[in-house]
Image 1: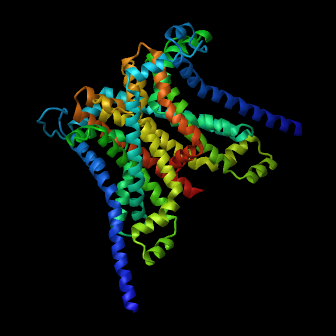
Image 2 (image 1 turned 90 degrees about the vertical axis):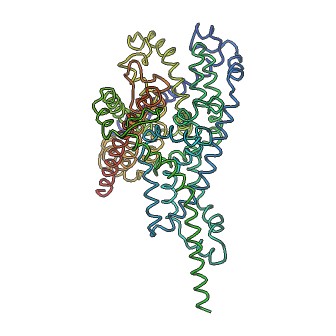
Image 3 (image 1 turned 30 degrees about the vertical axis):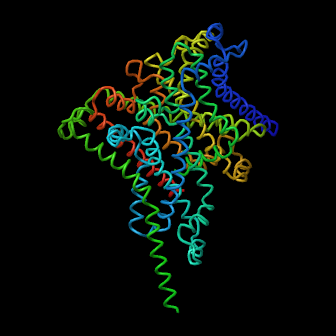
Length: 281
Length: 300
């Protein structure tokens, strides 16, 4: 009886390792193929798609940099992500703080519900009128994209932060205000440090979302190639160079590298940021 | 003295409430300017016959909505989304829970395994879609030849019946990462002594899983269902990048149909009516899901 139990326990453990092993192979195999294909000549790939390259063929990468202005698109993505995330991290917590501390007042109650409704409205509902509206406002450019990212981040951001701030007792800020701090000083000196964990979550969620977003740049920026972001560049690059898939793979690899480096260095924060964001919204 | 102090306090509170009001302004302004107004414009145009370019148009009432609901292409798209969403939700739950259970079981290398499984979550859907697109054309058919499986010998994405499976595979490859971590956290929240007690009472592994573990992960299960259902109904990136709705219209999801009608086919007002219908569907699902979840929590 006991033997049988131990045996079944062992079996389950072996099964677990098998599942994980198969899973890991499934996850890593596409990466392996991307990397080796990026370093092969078309001739080599046609001989064997799966084999290791004979030597590292760097011309694919050089061509991507030469033919396409990779650094320009990289720069655009950086500008859009940095500005959007910075503004989100400034204005959304301020608004959430005001709402959380004045929940009894009618105005704050109304704007809370008003902003939260955005969570239930998929982007595709507004995407078509948006194209028209932004071009009427002369905002079919990076500025418009940044404003849209900030706007669309506010619903989930306010929801997460208001609920978080409500759990923080307000005595400290009140004492600080009585001691002569202004509301703004009290906010920055006392509230912001307490918000750090939630701000980290919002930072990670939004940075990755803005960096990887495709649908909005496609709608707003596709007409003007000098404003393309990295995902938009990849999409258009593929349709331009379909014949040379080795070069295409090196472009995918180059596009992945920045995010992979960030993931490798701050994995802990990214995992907890993305999952926290998912749990609480 | 006393009076002066309280007056000072009054003044401070008044000033503070002014500042608080100012705090809300930037967000409320942007949200109104770029979200609410856009939405209102959308509702307005859905009652017109505007094609997106011409100068004059007129109000046509519910005509667009009637056209859309009668349109076979829209129904086809809706059908695609329904099937896709059901498959997506079911497979995401099955696979993520399976991986989470396995991760929860092993002691060695579990951090390593976890960090590998999470990688797909940080890459853009476009990159993932493009890579898999190439793999479906170049790598998977070789595998099909090697294994002698007929339907794998050509690209899944080129087959009208199987293209949906191809897209689903890519979505699962990337989409399981976050649910897996969530389920793992849920599994780790199950009290160890409760499991021990069940074991002593003679419950086997399966019984322990269904009777002890499952109730602890129900909140996470609900959340995964809601988020994935929303993702399934609004799928766009993978399809735009991999099949662009094809072959034929076999993978034309609602999101893509809206995009094509407005951007490529000049049916602006009709596409807006379609997005309003999508809004009603997703809204109904969210409300239904929330109702179900809150009932469950009360029952617990």
